[in-house]
Amino acid sequence: MEFLRRILGRPAAEQAPANEVTTTGSEGTTKEKKPPQPASLPDTGTLGPMGGVTRPLPPEPLAFLKEGRLSFGISSHVGMVRGNNQDAAMAFLFASTSANDLPDIGVFIIADGMGGHFDGEKASALASKIVTDHIINQVYLPILKGKDFADLPPINEIMMEAAQKANDAIIEQVPNAGTTLTAAVLIGDLAHIVHVGDSRCYLITNDNMDQLTRDHSLVQRLIELEQLTPEEAESHPQKNILYRAIGQNDVLEFDTMTRRLPPDSYLLLCSDGLWGLVEDKDIKKIVKSSPSPQAACDQLVALANANGGVDNISVILLKVPSK
Image 1 (cartoon, rainbow, N blue to C red):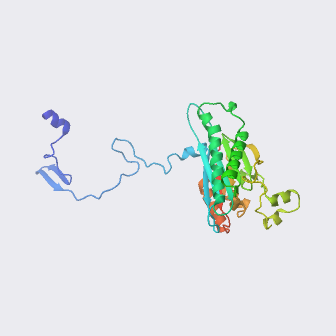
Image 2: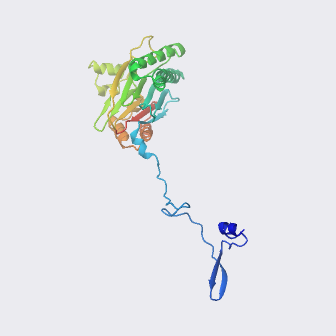
Image 3: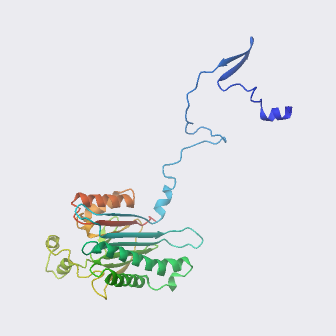
């Protein structure tokens, strides 16, 4: 019993109450009540219960990882005038750290639907779904299962197949509608783009903001034929007329391209609800000054609405890591 008492200390009945102090002096042993002590949190840098120094966690413990991987933001809004949102925005990003050493793989799509009632939004939703499904099945899943990139068909061919499948489905299921399509597949720092209509894709670097896609619109064609100036096109009564879009013809031509994205650059996909209301210089300023791609997307949509919001607004912003 004495052995246990040495290990465990005084029995509970013999231990002094928490608010009592025992003092031994020349006049014997006396007990006094301690004044109540206010509760307090441990100070930063004090010893913890295991003898280590306790420190508060940083606000974002994983913030140091963010610059090393591809990141993106996505936002879509009905605008200030329209009754429904006929845009569709879709994003899929795969990232891994493993012995397989797979690159980041992303699929990003903006589609701007056209058609009466709700046909436009059905067309854009169907197109984005079909294109994403085809690319995931033809690119992402084979790579995940161990297939080498060299054994895959060219990525641009896969994307054109996906866009043609979307075209066929819309003609069959939503015959009175159509949609633009601007899709980007990122594999590492390579961007593969397929495009039809007047949604746009921009490459933004420290020095420039380059429009990678060409509008398939009547006014753009007139500008190319030097029958219209860009200033005249802005107020042209037929500026929203497209001569090429998904759902218009059985066989459709698409623009495709491949671009290597430089470090610390941005890839911006958007509908005309953004670029038609926000100037390039303001887009670039917001993209470069925002703390994250998502914050930039939200600010761009807000500015388009502040400038009138006469159309649906959709935007996807990709941030390429510094190295």
